[in-house]
Length: 477
Image 1: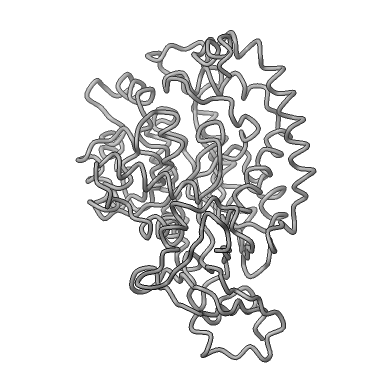
Image 2 (image 1 turned 45 degrees about the vertical axis):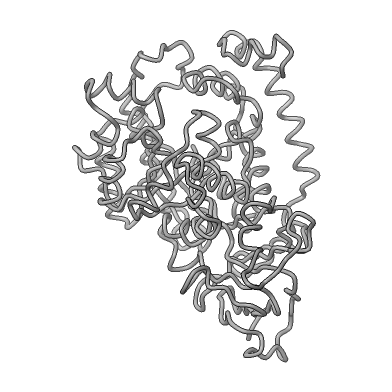
């Protein structure tokens, strides 16, 4: 029996021609699956127990965040407007050293709640001890997650290193993290909302030998390897110091057989066109965090080139809060589209409809979840959001000679217009209110913990001597 139906709505199905737009459409769900997505006049609601009026709304697939670090969300606003070479070791590092496990948990809850209320239904969570986040955040919040355990071989004490100093590798640390990743797969096997992936952090933080071992395990499990690739000047210095002056991240990965459809490559902003062509030919999937990389590195990631020129598969991600400052995929769509137009000096680049595709079915393809989510299609899981068009920033809405709400969703929406969120057919947000999260208590706890973290970290942060310290002393922030 049909559980509920959303009727008389604009459906963005993300299948067929364009966005698969259906005017005056109905979406019906039974036992968590979509059983109808089509014209309202072809669906009988007589025996449907819950009918939701979708008039003046867009009903569309939930958004897919393909690269997401939630654990440092309590450091939001703590590492912006500084040189890229300082960001990790002098910016985030001194503050992050004062974040304990419980702080990370609260930060994760805050990040997921933020993303959820702005329409994200799937998060590719990338972190240490990610099983704890799945058990304490994702499953209680009723959210879909691709759980990815971080694996690296380097010492956490790096604030004293110069940019040209090579990180010291500890192979035993990498092996311990790899075994923890294996337990992640075993723990959540059969859990409908959880899939798992391996997360070797980056080529400058993991040996090629360990990467090869992880690749083999990912292939044997039918899973994936999610790797930060060519993240900028800091990583390039490490790769050249370790592999030779002419080496790059992509050249080393290619040499060791580490490019393939098993690989999700995050960021990729320090790649050239020929390297990206090699990646696309090998069917590497890209997770692109446009806001984060433009903020941290001052570089536009090569998303448009990868998908529009090379035909590569890609999705969008928000990365971590002490970078772009938010986990809002509507903002990410807008940023991605605008940056592509500027970078290519071409206002036709990364159109609104392409951005919507990347945030839904494109993200699902990137995570290899497109058989179950990413489009409104009979047989897929009902990860669905509704967007209320009756907001001043989305008004007016017209449908002829074209539907202006398509560009408005990308260029004008803030995410606050999302009023209903369904995951696996379960209504986790209704009329703008999260049903499984006490937001007021969560925000209050986050504020309290953040005040303690920033206060206790002040001396270490000042000693690290980033450019941000100078700005603070001048009263700029």
